[in-house]
Amino acid sequence: MLDHVGLQCADYPASQRFYDAVLGELGLTRLMDVGVACGYGADHPVFWIGLHETGTGFRESHLAFAAADRAAVDAFVAAAVAHGGEVLHEPRVRPEYHEHYYGGFVRDPDGNNVEAVCHRPG
Image (cartoon, rainbow, N blue to C red; front, side, top):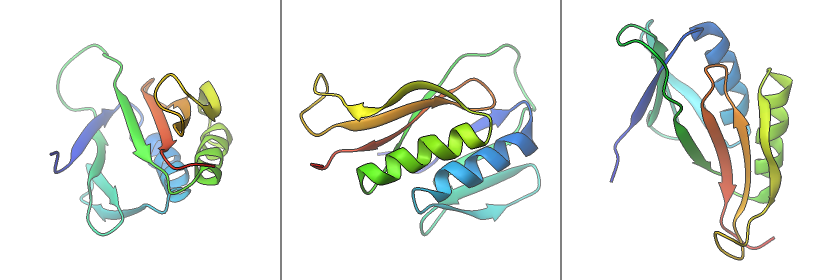
């Protein structure tokens, strides 16, 4: 349904370091850099971050990135912590969503709620 999504960042270099690390744990890399924004993905950019250039104020966004397995979720959260991220919800099975939902939630440098999730059995 979505082709790509982008976020504006208050501290663009900090966000680049954060997303380079956490998305790398999911097999995603920075595929394009146009100076004021960069895009991540596996074969083409689907998630973009860029300089905060328009608008005022802050509204928290929630983004969930697909992980291949539970170990990737754990590695995503560990990379987030190593790069200054705050753990919102430790990785665990969340049966309230469905029996195999394994997710971990962190706060990115701009205060967004960022999750890695695996929908496969352990």
